Each structure stands twice: as structure tokens, then as C-alpha cells.
Image: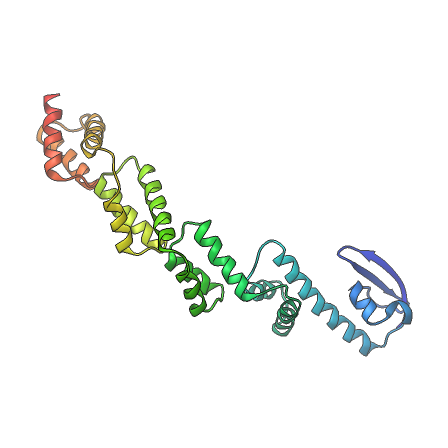
Length: 260
């Protein structure tokens, strides 16, 4: 088959047209040079099949390079991405080998970068970082080693900042309710219950009584339109207990409301 013409297209590729009645093909410049197509200008059917295979191999490799241009990726991330792009298993494995040979990817450095970013730029605790790392294909043993190198005070500062942020952002619940929500939330973020409770016990909350009084007044304005007397008191007490306030504190505030 004789090559009739070359036409430059995007991504350092060329579109080849043949003298014969055959569909045009697009090849990387590297493939054209490797097979001396600029000089030969003629290929057999078998050669063409080899050329197309080499082109797919490079296409897979360059696709991975593009994917890596945004951030470091684990081998599993690269594999899953290329699979979604429609490449075959052997093509993907060849691309990953090329990436490693050319030092484009380094699993150990990628792991270090992953742990560093999640520890110092995110809010996840060690357990969640471990879980995320395993999902990306990192080895549990190596993940554990990296996480152990993080100083304890770093984890403590992260957790304190997270808890403080959650306390300041909650303006509707009682101290008890806030603590319950924070424990649940921080457990999901990957911190241990022991550390969460320890930090919570040392945190300052806004005056519980003042908060309870505000909530009681708001409830009174709402419920007094529908209830009176003992029924109003019963409804208010139930609503306030649902918010986590203690019954004895509620009794005192309700008495204050009666006097008001």
C-alpha cells in the first residue's frame, strides 16, 4: 500500500492517506519515524497492523501522561482510568511499565504525596486516610508506616480545629446534642472515639442556660398559638428534651417563662 499524503493534525499526529481505496489513518509522529514511513512511503498489510498496534500502545501511554499532568496518581488510578478509556489490559500494563521505566511514576513518592496532602491539607483522620489509600491501591503496610511518621500533635491539632469548627457552626442544638453529633461526625472522618471525647471534654461551649432560655422563648412563641396551660408545658418540655437539654434545667427555665 502506497502512502499518498501526510496531513498534520492535533497532538503531534499525522493523518495518512493511501493511494489505494483505504480509509485514512492517524499516527503519532513517533510511530512514523520509528517505521521510516517518510522514506519508505509504502507498507505491507502486515506492517500496517504492526504500526497500528504500536500507535495504540503509544496512545495509551500518552493518555496516561495527560492524566498525570494534573496530579500524582497511583498505579491503580492510572489502570482504572485507562480501562475506562477503552484500552485493553495488556496495553494498560505496557503503558504503566513505560511510565515506570521513564521515571514518570514512582509508587513510593506517590504514596508520600498522598499521605502528606491528606494530613496537612485535608481534615481526614488516620483511619479514613488509610481507607482512602487502600482504595487507591497502596499497600497497607506502607500506608501504616507513612501514617506512623506523622507526629501525634499534628493529629491532635487537626482534630481540635475540626471540633472547634463544628461547635462554632452549630447554633441550634444543646451542648449534649452538639457533642453527640461531633463524636459521630469525627468518627466518620477517621478519628478515634477516645481522642474525640478527650478533646471535647476540654472544649468551651457557650453558656448552656442562656442557650436553653433562647430556645424556650422561641418554642413558646410558636407553640402558645396552639396550646395552653399544662399541654403547652408538656409540648415545650418534650421539644426541648429532644434537643438534648436536661429535664431539671428545662423545669427551671419553664418556671422562669411563667413568671415572665
